[in-house]
Length: 317
Image (cartoon, rainbow, N blue to C red):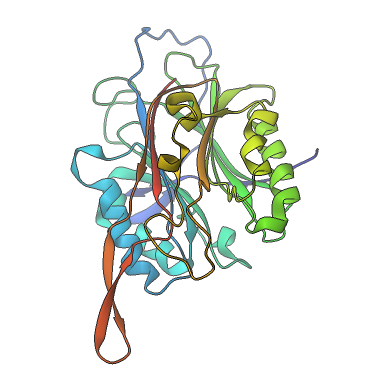
């Protein structure tokens, strides 16, 4: 199946110029001698931040604070349903500007013609940039992973969905390219044929010549029984099942958790993490907190930050 690539630029905030500057292409040197060491685990958080409910910017700020603050901050952040206002809020957040590389910082191309899109944030402490003030190739506790190309894979989709892919290269294996793919697959029950095609395309991206595997994570919109089988059919490891088994899948639900819906639909495991060529260490579901929202009559109600829970996954290369 042929896929279209839209190449974009990963960007980092340069504090000396106060501008978002494009990250230069990664320089490869296959002959470079690198001291072999056990790589530190990486932690990724993925969250659909719910663009369609009221006060998306305020909710997104609370959600981002939950991811960034404390001792459980993540090296990789996948966000889905980011609208233009939320994008601007993320790019202007001092914590993001000082400590993260972000996709889609240079323009709004990915957000044109769609109500929302995906964004990926990478910790500048773990991923290499020529704009980093540290000595090239070094980071706290070990060498940084080098950044490669960034692109969006156009998917067969009713809603204009794509796969946002960032390539990374371990310092101990300069010829090994891994891909981190942030996804929001097509919604609703009748879109299963689209989702099946989308996962087939994305799985192929992880098996292309020169790629040694990686992660596909985000909102898979897995609403049917058939959806639950798509990862296995495409040779992808369902990380939750690999770590926790099938004993109590209720704990893996990420949508409709702790709320009563008018349509009667119960909680579902819509969000997932799939891997090829990586080793998962830990995975958990992150429950959203609440924000106070005003309602007519001068009163207010508490609403979750998002209608989705987040996923936090720790893995090694």
